[in-house]
Length: 181
Image 1 (cartoon, rainbow, N blue to C red):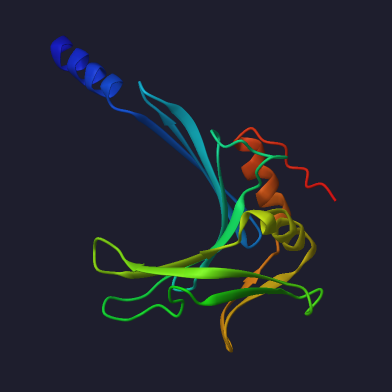
Image 2 (image 1 turned 90 degrees about the vertical axis):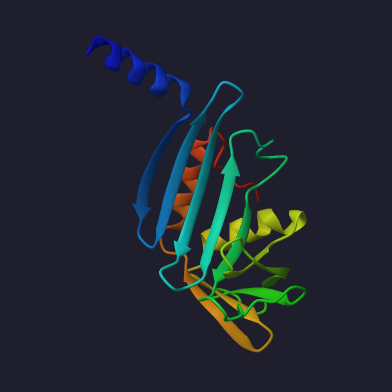
């Protein structure tokens, strides 16, 4: 019995530790995963809304990132489609993020699409480096954001709970959550 206990303890010690945590803030969810290994220890944090058949609007940060004020998390939209069906987003298309508080203000990004290892079509579009801070500020200010591809609305994402989710995500990964003006 003692040999089995020691063997199980040794096996558990050899495997990398992955502790995951989850919080919900209205329409947004925060996921935090600790990765601990002999080579590297880091924390991966994300805040997202959508899913369950809808596209996902998310922001992510990695504890090894430079972080604010040098680098802010990138907001991106991600979608997948059932096998043998294309995604609405296709490589090279322009994606517009249009906010409820000012229809004339929008942020544009370019889409990228691919087929994953399981044969499922996926696509995403993330804002560029210079648009990261304005996008986060707009997400904190707004109630919702419409995500458009040409004349087709891909998704209307609720921003209810975004500010709290963003704050928790940044805090858990060890970054300042303040967004300068």
